[in-house]
Amino acid sequence: MCDRDTLAELINLHQPAARGFWCSCGEALDCHIDQHRAAVVIAAGWRPPARRIETPAELDALPEGAVVRTAEGRIAEKTCHYGAADRHGFRSDWAETQDDDIPIGTDELDDLPAIVLWEPEEVTSGE
Ligand SMILES: [Zn+2]
Image (cartoon, rainbow, N blue to C red; front, side, top):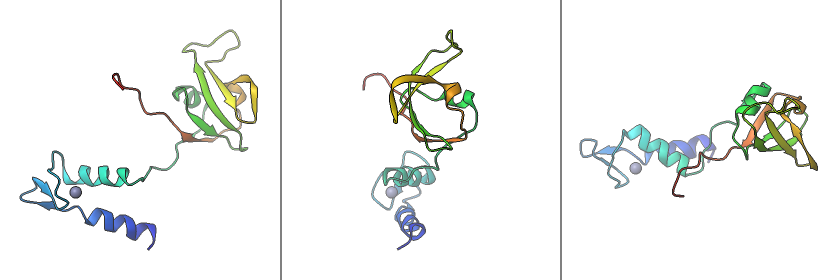
């Protein structure tokens, strides 16, 4: 079965029932059926396409821990964000997987565009 058919089958398993208060899967609906279906699809592992980073400012806007792959195949993890530029003009430090000795600044990840391989969820208190 192709991905499209698998996804369509998964979505089709969730139909509004009992005037929209319940889903055919047996779960009470506390949201719109489309939002419930989206939650089911995300829980099944679907992810949106990788974010594409076009500018240094977009790199700087990523949270610490984000991992990118640049146009030339360099993999780097954002290790620190200063907020304001430091004396070298850097707003962020990145650790390249190929060279873990010295952090580099955002301006040294100059082979954009890059794609975001991983981005940490926003941290909520109490977890
Ligand atoms: Zn359901």
